[in-house]
Length: 199
Length: 294
Image (cartoon, rainbow over all chains, first blue to last red; front, side, top):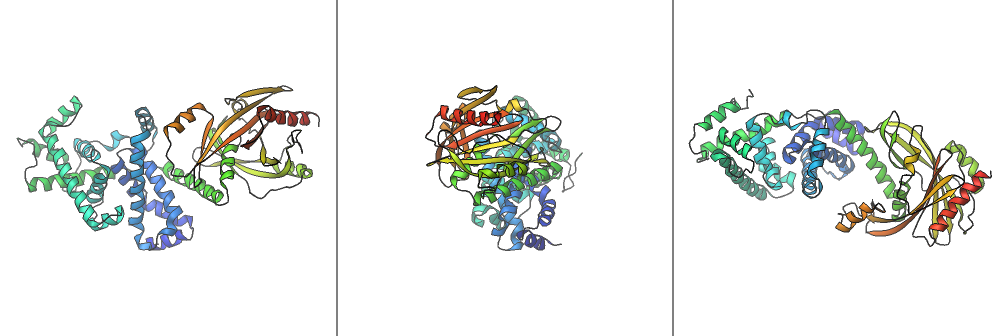
């Protein structure tokens, strides 16, 4: 069954259609949520909330063919709220406890294995949310700026401007690593990065 | 060693950069190559992430709760929203049941009463499957209004229903004051002592039964309400509860007495009442003594 038909069925309350869409999108959304939040337990919370909102608000989606960007939009809005909340209220100790408590392939050690992965992840996570979102959609999802604008609910010009700013920051930060880890507080990290000359 | 989409290994690329003397991204060619690595690396990270089975269970559990909640909210006034939360003191929440791990109890009842005459008490008890202590009229003037039978679902952490229970709610009124008597059978293995492990303001002994009284502040707020510093401070006191779901912020005082007798957990609860702690404890005493004299 194609996606449009599944969405049509979901609109009439068909739970099987929801389950099929969940299967199709679960990994896509979890990966995007992880890359944009940088934490697996946050990513799972974001995906959970995204699917719940999807089910509850599917009636608001006018055209079935717009399901994918609409779903991504929910994910990014949820991730944005989560990022704001995270800044405010989660004590460091709880983060450690929750990180240990997650299951499946969720440990950071098992996801971030190589130095490239560590450095790219670290650099992307150091960007502001709005820049990080554009970077993930552009580089990870390989979406065009027009599509990104639909997902983020802004103009294509805004996306281009954010992408320009994000690239500039990425370039600066990655170059800084190449120069010897400028901007890193931790001495051990700095030594590791200096040794790598990533870029 | 991991291969990127470009066919270049991570180490290859790092080695390439090691040859550079200044480590900067001096020209567009280098930056384009760096962009490719960013893209490939993000995709490499993504490929290692798979949704666990428990995530689907979490989604379904949350969805079920939200659908129930939405259904209830559509039919609830602000007062009923907070009364629903108040009922949580006794009948809804998270409890430990021996052999089953941590479970939660969620419940709902119809806004339409099941019975409207006190004479139907036996029918209500038959529907619930157990008998309770109750009176038709209290000495302080509160008198019987109606009876609701509520369904409670016992669920494990994954959201799977382990069993169902029925509780009995009896509404009483006196002028503008309204109180509800909540009663439910304690579940097999449930720790009855934990039900009375509340920071009571006052207690009373009635024929060997301990009755506890507390007065709490309930703040009903919109779903997107953000906690103030004062809210956080009040929450630490243990006598402050938040209820989400109203259009505007509204504050009420909840008056509560609770006790456990013969395997049944009881509480009487009301909002913004014109009676005091002794009146509430006296109502509990009447129910207990009436039950003992049956």
